[in-house]
Image 1 (cartoon, one colour):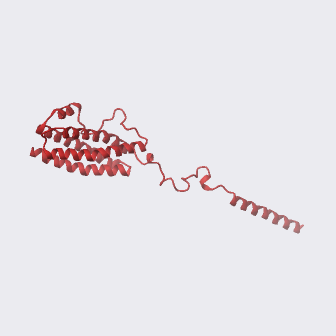
Image 2 (cartoon, rainbow, N blue to C red):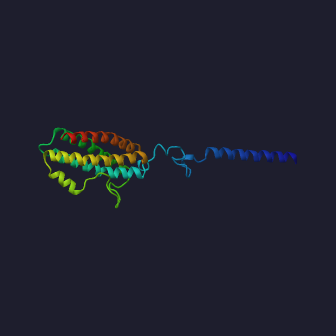
Image 3 (cartoon, one colour):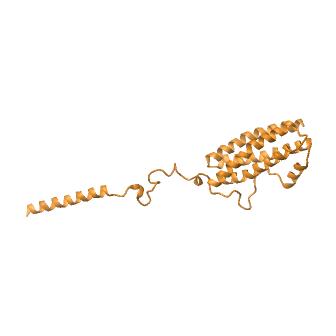
Length: 203
């Protein structure tokens, strides 16, 4: 009787051992188990889509700065078509256009990659320092020194608005590229504000 029990115990142990081996070799890999895809393999952070790498502040900054830049380019174009304008003012207009036009394309690309609309939702303004229709008409009609003074006065206010928007983005944004651009805008446009104030005083 004791011999029979020993054989039975050995048999049970063998079955358990075989089951354990089968479980090891045929187990489902972690990457294919429910809830254990790329996230379970530790890849979600590095391969996250661009749409998740931004927040509301980034979206509002970009949506607001695109029309802001667009108007600055339009104002600069107006000045470059005029005759009798101080050379330093036309040089500034050329610099503003050259800097901001590529940034418009860059920011438009961000919104597309983030799956965000190009324009702000209804009820939101386009940003501080924007010129109204009457302001733009006055600039378009002005000539010579009068045009230069008006351009500088308007662009100082325009730049001051951009600096406010960019400062907000620097403090509240999440996207590294958007934050980098916002800091660059604060630096460059603050310097241009001082330059324009000097030019305005000399006219």
